[in-house]
Amino acid sequence: MSTISIAQGTDVLNYIGGKWEKSNSSEILDVINPATKEVLGHVPMSRVSDVEAAVKAAEAVFPDWRRTPPGDRVQYLFAIKQMLEDNINDIARTLVMENGKTLTEAKGELRRAIENVEVACGIPMLMQGYNLEDIAHGIDEIMIRQPVGIVAAITPFNFPGMIPFWYLPYAIACGNCFILKPSERVPMTMQHIFRLMEPLNLPKGVLGLVNGGRETVDALLDHLKVRAISFVGSTPVAKYIYSRAAANGKRVQCQGGAKNHAIVLPDADLGVASKVVAESAFACAGQRCLAVSVAITVGDARTKFRDAVSDVASSFKVGYGLDEDVRMGPVITPASRSRIEDLIDKGHHDGAKLVRDGRNPKMSKYESGNFVGPTILDDVPAGSELPSTEIFGPVLSLVHANSLEDAIRILGASEYGNAASLFTSNGATARRFKYEAPAGNIGINVGVAAPIAYFPFSGWKASFFGDLHAQGRDGVEFYTEKKVVVERWA
Ligand code: NAD
Image (tube, rainbow, N blue to C red; front, side, top):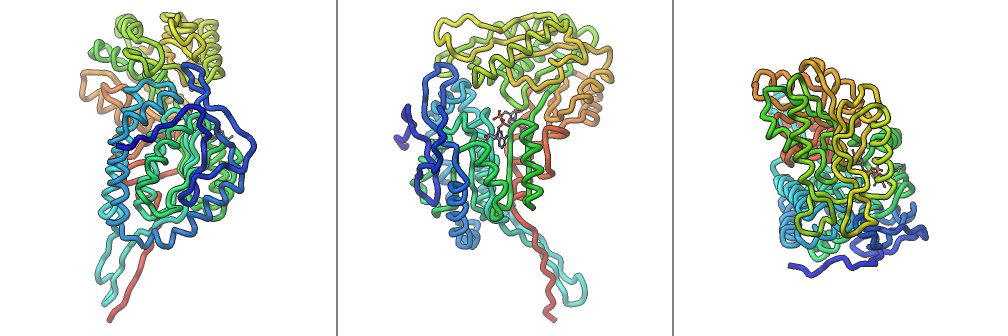
């Protein structure tokens, strides 16, 4: 096991051509622990020239890397997997310090990162093409997959350890060179992981890390040599990146924001439903793109579910994610906290009843942290802002419907389509929901329908722009070009 860890006050560096480089930018932001408010480090807003250097390094190594047999390329992935396994506790601590989630949540997301590495280890099988003999007399046809070239990913703050691994392992296993631009609010986790990957001796330039913000992203979107862009973040930025990258002729996949609904029917096990919905709404402080944000109760489920979910919510201990027994950490920034508090206020003002008010939770430690406790509002008026806006905080809105049809209509009216869940004990009802619900990730008696790495992380409507998703076979499709060869050897 390595002893590398990220010390406080770290200057975040870029990793270019196998070397740690200071950015050419003089614009530097603080990386702040959202619970303790300590400054953890300083992150540069890298310039066009930094991106140029990373692309040049990738370009230099790409011809050799794509010729490296897939079976040899995946040996590096086996080493990455082992490194992540050996260092999961240390990396998780870095992640908690900069993101605020709990240590258990941090380890959970790193497990999904590891799982993606494991799937990409199957590239020698997954990357295979197909062929057909005798498409005409003496003529055969084959389809082969080749790497796309230099590819880049731009990732958000809420899963600093997992989301880069939706892309990195597939990209390099397929023979591409990969450049990551992590969120400037949480750059330390990938700094930590890249330091641990350094001794694994991947050919220099296969992996690049460029820290920064909008200018850095634009440089990647506009660079002619960058052939594909993967993005995860908010919908307005997803739309911007999708259109700019596509206009520059790149292959693009952009995951956007979300507003997820859970429908609770009277025949559901309300004990399970309340636990699972509360976990979905409040874990990771509600900062998950799969978090349930609106629960729609049908008929009799209304008061029973409200009381049960409120009881579960009161058991969530709010605090610093590194402290024992803490179930929910802070939200990422003071601005995010104020926005969430304003939305709660507005919802209450619009007529919703506050069942649990998580604003200004009493904290025995870390009083200055960005804490918002679990919040539940009932009878949230349809058409108000609360049930339609992505809150990205620990706030659950309860709305009511007379029937399953009405409930599906409510969730169908959302501009987003990331996830939707149904709680029922009736198989036929569940089948109907699975069939009709207009969302990409469906949960049946499940609150966070997070696809494991062998399945695509789907998402519909304003939650996704593109066609091929992250993870699994979609990842392999995205990172390879198909080439068809027709041969005559009479
Ligand atoms: P964000 O959109 O603010 O930032 C995401 C990335 O884009 C960051 O790397 C950031 O530096 C960059 N960026 C921000 N503004 C930019 C601009 N104007 N031009 C170019 N680049 C820009 O998102 P966030 O706050 O970091 O993450 C939260 C959002 O991500 C939520 O909306 C959440 O739903 C979404 N999310 C979606 C999924 C999914 O799978 N659909 C998964 C995780 C998070």
